[in-house]
Image (spheres, helix red, strand yellow):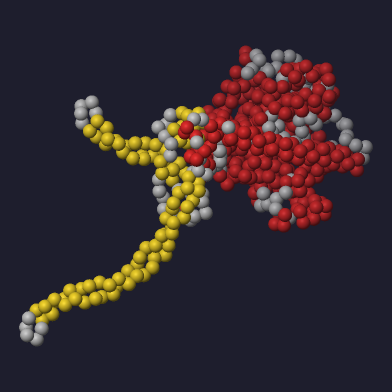
Length: 557
């Protein structure tokens, strides 16, 4: 029941955030909002709880996994042994980026044959009838499920000039709340690793997330900017093809995929390097300069931070196998002589005793490797106002032997040493049990976003880790966040990994504001002013839509 209560709380908080940023609170169509939320919940229940529906999505997911295998065949021909992780290890450029190429070409084939348009039309038809949307925004919302935020507007190009502001925001939020099919296959490779069953599981979750986020995006957009004008309900998919024949469509799709793959690779190099640089700046400045003294008071620089106190050379006794030592023992016995006189006789007896042995080693503990606890470090005598003397414990920072050293833990003899300060780096490492080695950008993002991670349903012990993934996704992009999941997956529960999968499944980040201004603005130059006006609102709406989807998933998994 806790998951249900937290899910209801999360949905309430997220809808309240949208309400706060609404441009016209009185005009909000709460019936439409309820229908959109109901569609999300019903679809989530169907996929995650109904075996028949789940088997359908498992079958679709296995198709995406097959795409990965087909890509591997082509990549192996070009890259040879570099595709085998057992030979060269995991190389992102060879194992992940080629999937973007192949899936982009495959999408072009499906679009040229008219298959993709039919699927988009069917999904748009349902949303038009159920939520009473215009034809243009229904088509855009459906298209965003399968293609990117700059490609989806092409589906409704004839309508862009006449779309209302509410419809235009709905288009933008939909683009931010979903992902492109080309990168979806890459995310499956990220999350599933080399295990086929795991790949199929996360393929199902990613597909579910992308589809659930379509009504969530409509919900968010219609709260942020409610519709107050008459709209065109005409529903017609343009017949334009991306090529004069099938071969040209494949060529165009491959070229587009190549641009995307190169852009993704370059973006990851730059953004991950920037994160590393900002991490180093944070840990080497604030992380080293700020801390607390042994009496618990705040300290900034000063004598408490002398260099020689940043490391400790500690003597540790390592028990060795004991040796047997012969010990001479003198025993007294009473002997009666022939004359009848008793006397004392001394007998020497040799006995074997087990003698313990110890080896002394000296272990240097660095500041970020110390196991530090606030504990009793001694006692002091205090005389009260009534003249009565008593002994009270004295608290302080106590340093224990390093549990991360190469010395076996079960043979380590723990000894405590008083120290006079704890830095932010030390505290961060100790309080997170090593998940964050120092006070850095990732830890800051984790702290800021951890309340959001909690309302999404993330287990309490994982909210810092999931929070920093949410922060990276918003500030940088979802690709960087997904790329970080393999490095933290051993430290979080499976449920947290699933919730993160849903929460990250969208293009909602600051860079996407510029992408939409450039992409949609190029198709409809006269709407650039409105696009610029809605940039931040679209980011808020897309982010909340992804979080709504994750919250519902957190209630069900």
